[in-house]
Image (cartoon, rainbow, N blue to C red):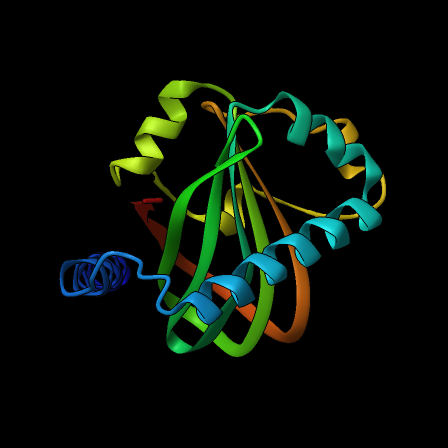
Length: 186
């Protein structure tokens, strides 16, 4: 019985994730004012991450690329979901837009907002991100930004993720994952 419930949960999350990514469009930055607002939020959240943990600077300087999601909004009651928009930088230069969708299933309830920065160690991990083959469960791989946390942090499979809580609370014992989409700048 327990195994069949786990299997059903895995199928539910897989279906939820497929639905989120299969029907969705490529991240669209919208109007010029939308792009300007997103850029200012990205710059502000980078400053917040650096203020929270100055040792994160080594990743901004040494990473091949990074994506900044200034706000990801998540909510859950058994089934959960989250979404956020961001900007992608390679060698410190803006190269495009991205969005993230997250699905989960399990014992969970609540809502929260958080920021996320994903650093790519090399061109290969960036390519995985750009072409939609990078997926993972951020709860299992993310490092909460706090003073000195980045100092001892290391890449795992060419990727490292930092999160910064902004508001809300979520209690979770769930399985799920994040899916990303990329739109190059014109």
